[in-house]
Image 1: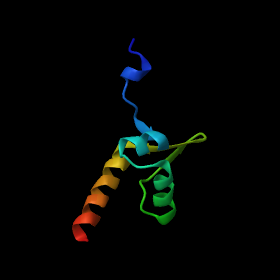
Image 2: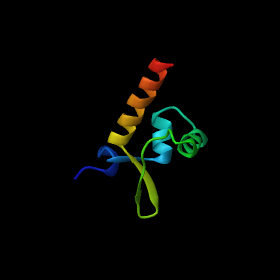
Image 3: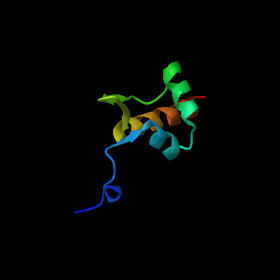
Length: 68
């Protein structure tokens, strides 16, 4: 059986999302407060960001940068 680290996660933790997108966790929370962060889901007490939500967020950020 594969070790856990060999199985890609189905969703990012906030820390993983921030690291993967080269932003600070503080920036993540700022984006969430201001309404332009990625969609999140609660699983028990954890807050997670699906890979699909991260992809939508990246497309929205690209569109916003193009429109500016």
